[in-house]
Image (cartoon, rainbow, N blue to C red; front, side, top):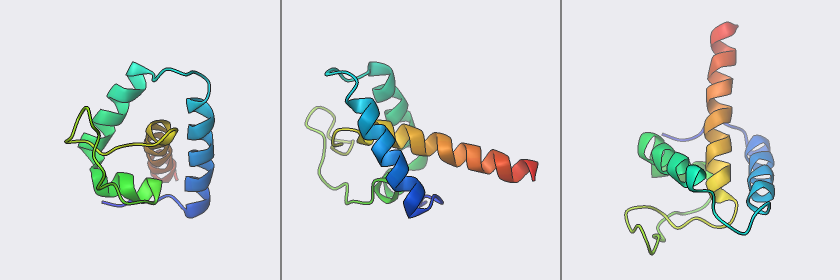
Length: 93
C-alpha cells in the first residue's frame, strides 16, 4: 500500500514532523509506540512512500524496523492522521 497524500502534503508534513522533533533532545516514547503500530498496520512500503526514500537501512536496536532520521517518526504519525482525516472527509461528502 502506498500513501494517497500529494507530494505537497507530504512536504508540509515532513516540515511539521521535523519541527516537532526539534522541540526536545529526547525521543518521545509515546511517539515511538505510535510509529511502531503504524509501521505494523500500514507497512514499510507505505512508510517509504510517505518519507519518499528507501527504508532498507535497519534500526540498530530493532532490526525488524527501518532506521528513521530526525523528524521521520513524527512525520509518519502526522501522515497516518492526515490519511484518516482525508478518508473521514470523503465519507462525509
